[in-house]
Length: 225
Image (cartoon, rainbow, N blue to C red; front, top):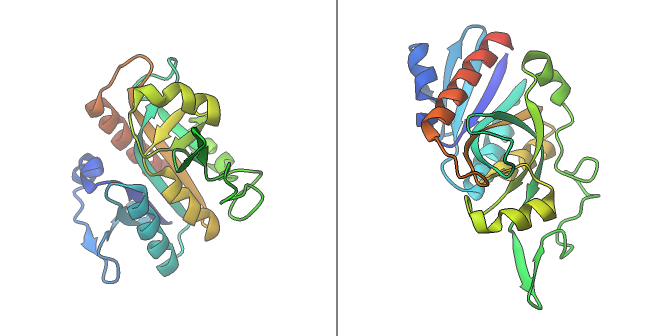
Protein backbone atom coordinates (compact mmCIF):
# COMPACT_ATOMS: atom_id res chain seq x y z
CA UNK A 1 0.00 0.00 0.00
CA UNK A 2 1.26 3.47 -0.91
CA UNK A 3 0.61 5.82 2.01
CA UNK A 4 1.03 9.53 2.59
CA UNK A 5 1.42 10.32 6.28
CA UNK A 6 1.08 13.99 7.16
CA UNK A 7 2.50 15.38 10.41
CA UNK A 8 3.38 18.84 11.65
CA UNK A 9 6.93 17.81 12.56
CA UNK A 10 8.93 14.65 12.05
CA UNK A 11 9.70 14.80 15.77
CA UNK A 12 6.03 13.97 16.40
CA UNK A 13 6.61 10.45 15.04
CA UNK A 14 10.25 10.01 16.07
CA UNK A 15 9.41 7.12 18.46
CA UNK A 16 7.77 5.25 15.56
CA UNK A 17 10.78 5.87 13.32
CA UNK A 18 13.17 4.64 16.01
CA UNK A 19 11.01 1.62 16.80
CA UNK A 20 11.35 0.35 13.24
CA UNK A 21 14.94 1.54 12.79
CA UNK A 22 13.96 3.66 9.81
CA UNK A 23 16.13 6.05 7.85
CA UNK A 24 13.80 8.35 5.92
CA UNK A 25 15.15 9.09 2.45
CA UNK A 26 14.74 12.59 0.95
CA UNK A 27 12.28 12.99 -1.89
CA UNK A 28 14.01 14.24 -5.03
CA UNK A 29 11.12 16.50 -6.01
CA UNK A 30 9.64 17.61 -2.70
CA UNK A 31 12.07 18.74 -0.03
CA UNK A 32 9.45 18.49 2.74
CA UNK A 33 8.75 14.79 1.99
CA UNK A 34 10.84 11.78 3.00
CA UNK A 35 10.20 8.13 2.25
CA UNK A 36 10.67 4.70 3.79
CA UNK A 37 9.22 1.20 3.78
CA UNK A 38 7.51 -0.46 6.75
CA UNK A 39 6.15 -3.99 6.50
CA UNK A 40 4.31 -4.07 3.14
CA UNK A 41 3.79 -0.30 2.98
CA UNK A 42 5.61 2.33 0.96
CA UNK A 43 5.29 5.52 2.97
CA UNK A 44 5.86 9.16 2.10
CA UNK A 45 6.15 11.25 5.26
CA UNK A 46 5.12 14.88 4.74
CA UNK A 47 6.22 17.42 7.34
CA UNK A 48 3.94 20.45 7.10
CA UNK A 49 5.44 22.80 9.65
CA UNK A 50 3.16 25.06 11.66
CA UNK A 51 0.15 26.88 10.14
CA UNK A 52 -2.72 26.09 7.84
CA UNK A 53 -1.21 27.82 4.80
CA UNK A 54 1.90 25.60 4.92
CA UNK A 55 -0.28 22.52 5.22
CA UNK A 56 -2.46 23.52 2.26
CA UNK A 57 0.49 24.22 -0.02
CA UNK A 58 2.53 21.13 0.84
CA UNK A 59 -0.37 18.66 0.77
CA UNK A 60 -1.50 20.05 -2.58
CA UNK A 61 2.01 19.73 -4.02
CA UNK A 62 2.35 16.15 -2.78
CA UNK A 63 -1.04 15.06 -4.14
CA UNK A 64 -0.30 16.68 -7.48
CA UNK A 65 2.91 14.68 -7.79
CA UNK A 66 1.69 11.30 -6.55
CA UNK A 67 -1.59 9.48 -5.92
CA UNK A 68 -1.87 7.38 -2.78
CA UNK A 69 -4.03 4.53 -1.61
CA UNK A 70 -4.54 6.58 1.55
CA UNK A 71 -3.52 9.97 2.96
CA UNK A 72 -3.40 9.95 6.75
CA UNK A 73 -3.02 13.06 8.87
CA UNK A 74 -1.85 12.53 12.43
CA UNK A 75 -1.93 15.60 14.62
CA UNK A 76 -2.88 17.11 17.93
CA UNK A 77 -6.02 18.89 19.00
CA UNK A 78 -7.75 20.62 21.90
CA UNK A 79 -11.04 19.29 23.25
CA UNK A 80 -14.12 21.48 23.67
CA UNK A 81 -16.03 18.96 25.76
CA UNK A 82 -15.39 17.88 29.33
CA UNK A 83 -16.00 14.20 28.53
CA UNK A 84 -13.09 14.02 26.06
CA UNK A 85 -9.92 13.44 28.14
CA UNK A 86 -6.35 14.14 27.13
CA UNK A 87 -4.87 11.27 25.12
CA UNK A 88 -8.14 10.43 23.34
CA UNK A 89 -7.74 9.60 19.64
CA UNK A 90 -10.50 11.14 17.52
CA UNK A 91 -11.55 10.67 13.90
CA UNK A 92 -12.44 14.10 12.51
CA UNK A 93 -15.06 13.46 9.84
CA UNK A 94 -16.14 17.07 9.36
CA UNK A 95 -13.59 19.89 9.55
CA UNK A 96 -14.90 23.45 9.57
CA UNK A 97 -12.95 26.65 8.91
CA UNK A 98 -13.25 28.67 12.10
CA UNK A 99 -12.03 32.18 12.80
CA UNK A 100 -11.39 33.16 9.18
CA UNK A 101 -13.43 36.20 8.23
CA UNK A 102 -14.03 39.77 9.39
CA UNK A 103 -15.99 41.99 11.75
CA UNK A 104 -19.14 43.54 10.21
CA UNK A 105 -21.01 46.16 12.26
CA UNK A 106 -19.50 44.81 15.43
CA UNK A 107 -20.40 41.18 14.67
CA UNK A 108 -18.02 38.42 13.63
CA UNK A 109 -18.72 36.92 10.19
CA UNK A 110 -16.85 33.90 8.86
CA UNK A 111 -16.30 33.10 5.18
CA UNK A 112 -19.59 31.19 4.97
CA UNK A 113 -21.54 34.05 6.54
CA UNK A 114 -19.98 36.44 4.04
CA UNK A 115 -20.78 34.18 1.10
CA UNK A 116 -17.10 33.94 0.13
CA UNK A 117 -17.29 30.15 0.25
CA UNK A 118 -20.46 28.10 -0.14
CA UNK A 119 -21.43 24.73 1.28
CA UNK A 120 -23.08 23.70 -1.99
CA UNK A 121 -19.90 24.11 -4.01
CA UNK A 122 -16.94 21.79 -4.43
CA UNK A 123 -15.11 20.43 -2.57
CA UNK A 124 -17.95 20.29 -0.04
CA UNK A 125 -19.85 17.05 0.57
CA UNK A 126 -23.34 17.16 2.08
CA UNK A 127 -22.88 20.78 3.08
CA UNK A 128 -19.45 20.52 4.68
CA UNK A 129 -15.83 19.46 4.34
CA UNK A 130 -16.93 15.94 5.18
CA UNK A 131 -14.97 12.72 4.81
CA UNK A 132 -17.28 10.11 3.28
CA UNK A 133 -14.84 7.19 3.50
CA UNK A 134 -14.66 6.74 7.26
CA UNK A 135 -16.43 3.38 7.36
CA UNK A 136 -13.23 1.81 6.02
CA UNK A 137 -11.16 3.09 8.94
CA UNK A 138 -13.71 1.86 11.45
CA UNK A 139 -13.04 -1.71 10.33
CA UNK A 140 -9.57 -1.39 11.80
CA UNK A 141 -9.92 1.02 14.70
CA UNK A 142 -13.36 2.39 15.65
CA UNK A 143 -12.34 5.86 16.79
CA UNK A 144 -14.99 8.30 17.93
CA UNK A 145 -16.23 10.41 15.00
CA UNK A 146 -16.19 14.14 15.73
CA UNK A 147 -16.51 17.60 14.23
CA UNK A 148 -13.36 19.71 14.23
CA UNK A 149 -12.86 23.41 13.64
CA UNK A 150 -9.67 24.92 12.24
CA UNK A 151 -8.69 28.07 14.12
CA UNK A 152 -6.02 30.74 14.03
CA UNK A 153 -6.15 31.43 17.77
CA UNK A 154 -5.28 27.96 19.00
CA UNK A 155 -5.90 27.06 22.67
CA UNK A 156 -7.89 30.24 23.36
CA UNK A 157 -10.08 29.26 26.30
CA UNK A 158 -12.08 32.49 26.01
CA UNK A 159 -13.26 31.48 22.53
CA UNK A 160 -14.43 27.94 23.33
CA UNK A 161 -18.07 28.73 24.13
CA UNK A 162 -18.56 30.83 20.99
CA UNK A 163 -16.87 28.31 18.71
CA UNK A 164 -18.66 25.36 20.23
CA UNK A 165 -21.99 27.12 19.79
CA UNK A 166 -21.38 28.36 16.24
CA UNK A 167 -19.67 25.30 14.76
CA UNK A 168 -21.03 22.49 16.96
CA UNK A 169 -17.42 21.35 17.22
CA UNK A 170 -15.95 18.74 19.54
CA UNK A 171 -12.35 19.88 19.15
CA UNK A 172 -10.09 22.39 17.40
CA UNK A 173 -7.08 22.04 15.15
CA UNK A 174 -4.62 24.58 13.84
CA UNK A 175 -4.42 23.22 10.30
CA UNK A 176 -7.02 20.51 9.68
CA UNK A 177 -8.79 22.35 6.87
CA UNK A 178 -5.47 22.72 5.10
CA UNK A 179 -5.30 18.94 4.80
CA UNK A 180 -8.95 18.12 4.15
CA UNK A 181 -9.58 20.80 1.50
CA UNK A 182 -6.94 19.62 -1.03
CA UNK A 183 -7.72 15.95 -0.34
CA UNK A 184 -11.36 16.53 -1.25
CA UNK A 185 -10.49 18.55 -4.34
CA UNK A 186 -8.00 15.90 -5.53
CA UNK A 187 -10.43 13.06 -4.73
CA UNK A 188 -7.81 11.53 -2.47
CA UNK A 189 -8.99 8.98 0.09
CA UNK A 190 -7.99 10.32 3.48
CA UNK A 191 -8.38 10.16 7.22
CA UNK A 192 -7.71 12.84 9.78
CA UNK A 193 -6.90 11.48 13.21
CA UNK A 194 -6.08 13.77 16.10
CA UNK A 195 -4.94 13.14 19.64
CA UNK A 196 -6.21 15.47 22.36
CA UNK A 197 -3.27 17.29 23.96
CA UNK A 198 -5.35 19.56 26.20
CA UNK A 199 -8.95 19.91 27.28
CA UNK A 200 -9.94 23.57 27.19
CA UNK A 201 -12.89 22.98 29.53
CA UNK A 202 -11.17 21.08 32.35
CA UNK A 203 -7.73 22.63 31.89
CA UNK A 204 -6.09 19.20 31.71
CA UNK A 205 -3.09 18.95 29.38
CA UNK A 206 -0.33 16.44 28.74
CA UNK A 207 1.60 16.69 25.48
CA UNK A 208 3.87 13.74 26.29
CA UNK A 209 0.86 11.46 26.74
CA UNK A 210 -0.67 12.73 23.50
CA UNK A 211 2.56 12.12 21.59
CA UNK A 212 2.79 8.59 22.99
CA UNK A 213 -0.80 7.88 21.91
CA UNK A 214 -0.11 9.28 18.44
CA UNK A 215 2.83 6.95 17.96
CA UNK A 216 0.97 3.95 19.40
CA UNK A 217 -1.89 4.67 17.01
CA UNK A 218 0.44 4.89 14.02
CA UNK A 219 2.06 1.58 14.97
CA UNK A 220 -1.33 -0.13 15.25
CA UNK A 221 -2.54 1.26 11.94
CA UNK A 222 0.57 0.25 10.03
CA UNK A 223 0.16 -3.30 11.28
CA UNK A 224 -3.57 -3.48 10.50
CA UNK A 225 -3.90 -1.66 7.19
